[in-house]
Each structure stands twice: as structure tokens, then as C-alpha cells.
Image (cartoon, rainbow, N blue to C red; front, side):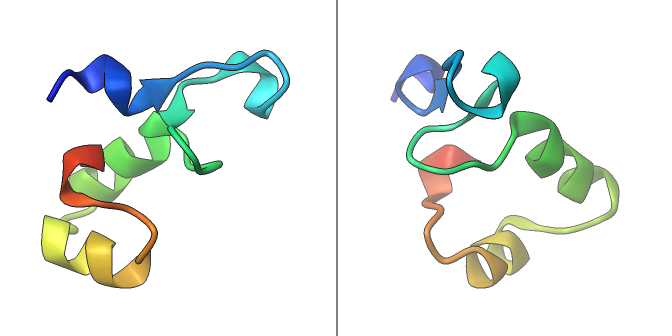
Length: 55
């Protein structure tokens, strides 16, 4: 899967910041969770509308 299929930027959403397609979750937020020690399982349990390809 190409990352560009999952990460988008839209001038009408979140001031054109990069986000996960279909959500209002910024890529920086996901990266921050990894920095704080979250793993993929915890993220997917906490945000059930994400899929593994989003991470």
C-alpha cells in the first residue's frame, strides 16, 4: 500500500495539515503516540476507526 493512499491534506480540514484519510487525526498525533510508547495494538484499540495501514 502506498502511504499517499492513507495520508492526505485538504485545505478545508485541519488547516491543510497532514491527516489520516477519513479522519481528523493528524499524522503528528500518531507519531507522538509512538514517541510516548504506544504500540499499534493500543492505538487500534483506542481508535477503532483506524486500520493497521494507517499506522
